[in-house]
Length: 155
Image (tube, rainbow, N blue to C red; front, side):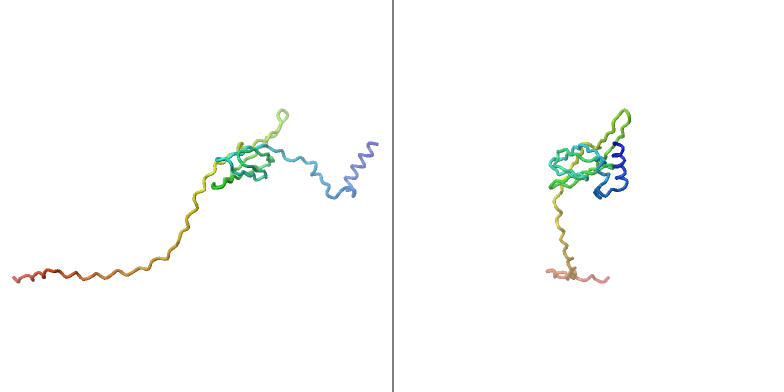
């Protein structure tokens, strides 16, 4: 009897039995990527930290992120400070017969030193150039209260 049930179930899955919902997929049997804990911190503390894979928090804090291939980034924002983004590398080490597989994060903890935002730049007012005024003509020498010197005597 067992063989009949196994053959019937296998045949139904191969034949595309119409009694199964059309959205049936084998994706439900795939395992989700493992998650890893990441410590997030900033200087000064209190910044909003958001990972490119979703989770975020206010520093100092710790979040669980999926161990995605290729890594992710963490972006820090805080009022009166420039935003900062730190790349994070995910390292998957395959296991063998004697050691289990492991996943590590580099760097961990992820720390960003935020730089203060300077005062807003003052608006530059462009003034129209001043028109050039002609220089005044050289004035005649002022009259002297002394009489002019006599002309030289002929020799």
